[in-house]
Structures are given as C-alpha cells and as structure tokens.
Amino acid sequence: MLSSPTLFRAYVIARGLTSSTNRPREDSWLKSLFVRKVDPRKDAHSNLLAKKETSSLYKIQFHNVKPECLEAYNQICQEVLPKIHEEKHYPCTLVGTWNTWYGEQDQAVHLWRYEGGYPALNEVMSKLRENKEFVAFRKERGNMLLSRKNQLLLEFSFWNEPVPRPGPNIYELRSYQLRPGTMIEWGNYWARAIRFRQDNDEAVGGFFSQIGQLYMVHHLWAYKDLQSREDTRNAAWHKHGWEELVYYTVPLIQEMESRIMIPLKISPLK
View 1 (cartoon, one colour):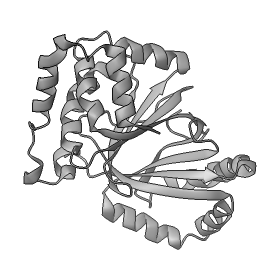
View 2 (view 1 turned 45 degrees about the horizontal axis):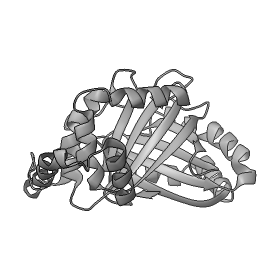
View 3 (view 1 turned 30 degrees about the vertical axis):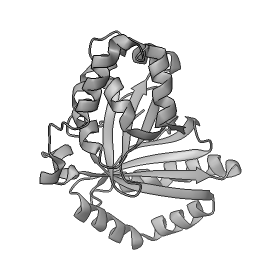
View 4 (view 1 turned 90 degrees about the vertical axis):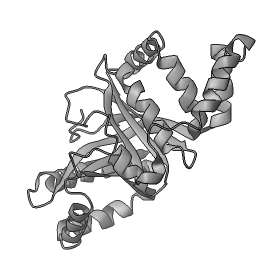
C-alpha cells in the first residue's frame, strides 16, 4: 500500500500544483478543510451518508487461501454458496465473489447483502450454525485458509446500487483507509465526483465500514479489460471538475489499495 503523502507528492508533481500561480487554490484547499456541507456532530456518519430508502447491510470477506488449495477452495464455494444465496429462508444475497488477479495473490473476496440490516445478519448467522452442510463446508474451508478477515459495510447514498450484470468483466476494488474524522468530507466530495465516472457504466458500488477496520471506504468498478480500465480512468481527467475533486480528496487518505479481481462462475456480477 502507498501512504497518502507519497500519493499526494506524486499527484502534485504530475499535475504541476506547486507553481506559484496555484497559491490561491492552495489557500482554497486549506479553507475547505474547515467547511462541511454536513455537520458530523449532529448525527452519526451512518445516518448522514447511507441510503435512507433501504436498510441493507453488506459484509465483505477477504480469504487468503493456501496457494495449493485455491482450486479446491473455489470448487467448494461454488457448490455451497449458491444454496445459501438461493434459499428463501435466508434474508441475504450473494452480490459477488472473486479471486484477486492483481494485488494480493491467492485471495478470495466475497460480498454479501443482508436485506433488513443487523437483524437479518443475526438471523442468517443463527440459521447457518444449525445448517449441518454449512458447518461441514466451513470446517473444510478453514483447512484451506492462511488467514481471513471481514468488515460490515453500508453503501453510500449517492452510489449505484450493486446489481447483477452480464460479463465477461474484470472488477477493481479500490480500498481507502481515510484519516479519522474525514468521512464526511469524503462523502461530500464523492457525491459530486461520481457523476464523472458513469459514462461506461463502470461504477458498481461504494461502501464505508461500520465494523472491522474503521474509516475504510471501498469503491467497486467494472471494466471489460485492463485497457478499458486505463481508457476510462484517463477520460475522467478531461472532464472539467474532476481534477479539483481529486486534489481535495487525496489529502484525506492514509493508505489505499487496488485489487483487480476475476469473478467466479457463480458470481451475480459476471
């Protein structure tokens, strides 16, 4: 992962923001740190930033698999996970499941939606503990893992709803560790920035953490291939306003990571 100072120095050099002609803009940036469209003291971040019309909770899982077990891991996941996803008595939906192609190797990423929030999550977990097939699956899967972690997420109100899409696509999960206290600023800027990234239907979903590693943001994008990703991202720089929003959001980041992922056959996001 790259630290935000390194990212920002690279951005400054590349975009020539250190010139004396940009002094008013630098002053404007400093002032922006003290201006919020929404006062976070008046309500929780989750209430200010999440979608009001739904009560969905998301869980993202990162499984680091033993290299020699990845094929077997994928096989048992493709056999068992659809049964949970399709069972009407489980209020959860498999949004997507992938292997990391570029980034951390031999890694699986799963994204779940729980319709009904925390009560739905508790209901699913309770039922799964009584599901003998799932208990056996989890034990067998555990023997294939080096490590695992998860986070509970809410989706940003201004982002696209993640819905199944045909393929073939590659997916990029861009994960940002924000500086504590900056989630509101991030949300305010990206509420405007997302409109610059809709031309090729690349925006899949945007989330922020509630439990697990905090002040984490995940943006999920879909592209036809790596060249399409490059072309789409470069095109954003030719749109008036994009550069300014990047300029303001980069200082909010402590660390960031990009994963290029390939969906499994069972993934609704193909």
